[in-house]
Image (tube, rainbow, N blue to C red; front, side):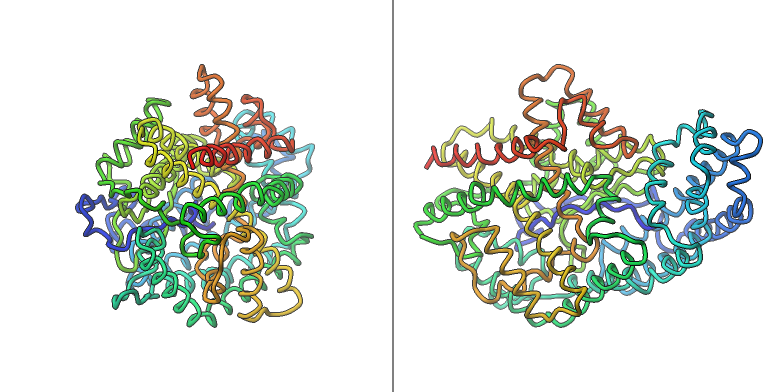
Amino acid sequence: MEAKSRKAAPKRANAKGATLKGLRGLPEWNLNDLYAGIDAPEVKRDLDRADSYSVAFEETFKGKLAALAEGEDPGIKLAEAVTRYEMIDDLLGRLISFAHLVYAGNTTDPVRAKFFGDVQERITSASSHLLFFTLELNRIDDAALDRAMAEPKLGYYRPWIEDVRKEKPFQLEDRVEQLFHEKSASSFSAWNRLFDETIAGLRFKVGGKLLPIEQTLNMLQDAKGEMRKAAALALGKTFKENLRVFTLITNTLAKDKEISDRWRGFTDIADSRHLGNRVEHEVVDALVKSVQDAYPRLSHRYYALKARWFGKKRLMYWDRNAPLPKVATPNIAWPQARETVLSAYGDFSPRMADIAQRFFDKNWIDAPTRPGKAPGAFSHPTVPSAHPYVLLNYQGKTRDVMTLAHELGHGVHQVLAGRQGALMAPTPLTLAETASVFGEMLTFKRLLAQTKDKKARKAMLASKVEDMLNTVVRQIAFYTFERKVHTERKDGELTSERLCEIWMDVQRESLGPAIEFKPEYAAFWTYIGHFIHSPFYVYAYAFGDCLVNSLYAVYDNSHEGFAERYLDMLAAGGTKHHAELLKPFGLDAREPAFWQGGLSVIEGMITELEGLD
């Protein structure tokens, strides 16, 4: 049972860090609601409990589920087993969540790294005693299990049980499952950790200073072109110097996944992700094709427009996310960012704002940049018996405010879904991005409505279009890159040169002829953490963005009752399929028009920008 983390797409931060005006005193999270510290006696107590509870569970139920299902009061007895399993899952989740958050605070600290590794090993060992449960559950006769679920106590868990049974065709013999599980700590988990620590330890020389990755990436949004170029060259240089280790990590993890998929019988390299997302591969294929077909109408068109704004035929790749020329880019102090997001949430739903308020009032947010801190941003749900925590690298830009809105959307979603319990609160990744992107849209609409200056409005629209292109076009391009890499890996290891070549081919196709690339950009695939931690996760962002665009169109047409239906959708957690969740809004992701409707929103914004040109 691994940490149920939901990591958001990497967001950039400002190179000047917390020395910027208004960024002193940024909040740091208080993890005491989980544990008081890594040396707290409660940590050892709960690790010991995890061991003893798991062993006792195995002794009580292993080899007996089929008999329970056929015996007297099967629903009640099986419900008792599932309830105990859920309690242990919550305990293990609390421990690994705490270890993950401590480690994310400084991935280069050897004490934290050891703690994280030690807890991972203890959790892997304890949870190995639970592996039998879902395997045996899937061996129960369908008719017997259906009869047992007529008992309300077990019927409550029907969504979780039905999801477990979808895994049945791909599960292996018990001892093989146990081997896969126990070796995870020394296989893909170890390579994930190597990637994290390598990325966090990299330094990029810009203007005589050695900077970490977050600050350097943020400089690609600097108002000064020479600063953007210097940052891009520094990134490319350091990435290239470390190609060997990133190539090894990528090849190893792709092979590890291929072995697992082959043993389990998955026919396509992304099938395991689709199964985990509870989404049909035909739906994903339709999304990917719709976005790829729209490249000329979206990214190609927009970047050609932006190049004209800069007085050029082509934009250098480091200018792709540059602020518009002759438009001020003010730094936004934390209190203003907080008020902006909470007001946007409150205008939509006071209940939504009240939940978001807790993150500020109770120190559930860690906002400053620090050496060694995990890059990007995420909202970690931890477990329903606790609450989520949000990690940011806040640098005072408009995009950082949107990141705050994004992660708080996740946080609100996770709080609302928590009532479903440890087994059914987690949401498939395709729908996990809905609340975050919707939160961004609410915040953007509020900021845009308050902006009367034509130049500032143009800059805001351009920034939003770029965010949407990064969320839709870029993520589908990332998905295409992954598919090519994992497909070729079946025939042997890929060289660094081949990985760079695939990356450049995909970038040229997706971004279009208005973007000019230089050789150093070929190594930029190395820092995309989703390729390492969550293979094929990235299409979830495009799914979520298009879904939210369609949802927001419904909201625009009729506000009455929408907020209540929306919050009910979030509160469902993982208990419903995406088709069932979208039905109250008259939406169906299986229809091609669904994706076209979402993409047309981006097209409309680009058209509006052309009108402001």
